[in-house]
Length: 296
Image 1 (cartoon, rainbow, N blue to C red):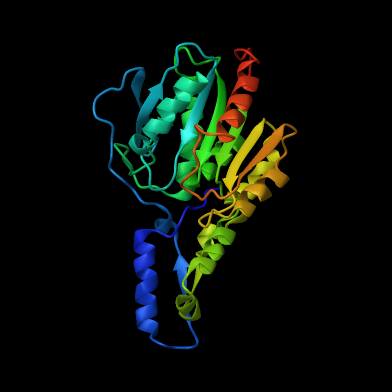
Image 2 (image 1 turned 180 degrees about the vertical axis):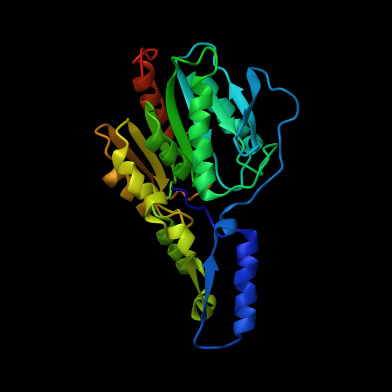
């Protein structure tokens, strides 16, 4: 289902601690990457009520409360449900969300993950996927949005949440930006980013809980048949571009496109520059042209 972006600050310190304890042992040791290493909760929130947006609160059955914003375009039948990276709040993503809404003339629903921003609760892989599905349901229950076309957008770890949501609800489009396909493969790819000396002493391995086959995006993407766009830089050392390509190849969509960005890494994808902007405009225009939903 969900994967990860990069070893967290705490994980990097843990790796250094393991190395210090190992000393110069030639045998090396293993550092297990656990679920808690994937989340970097931040408390940044937007001040006041931004023009053209309204606050959204979605209560969950376990008493957690998801808080975010609905940016409303002047005229659009398309709403983008956005899931950001594991170290980002909606406030951090606000400039790109505001730009996307205005440039593409789309509504955008963006809610902070549990423990992020003003949202309560503790984030975990499975529960964040279920929250993603709840966001789709909440949008469709919102007055004025019952017939809106829905595109699910996921960046980095949010790509896993977007895939989970699209696999469990009928949506009209899926956009993935630098997405993970397999949690174990991403974790193991980080070993190649360690200094050669560190690699002699420690090996990163995923916790078995992160390797559950049914929770991997690659296991769900085949059931998703809506139009698909994947954007991925070939210089991404956090989630290798091969992950995005794997999702593209395994996707069940007939209308699918993969946009490789030469020389671009994980956190420097510019949506407001070519060729990403044109790719977004194309898929959004295609779905908007379908008109309002008549029935689900």
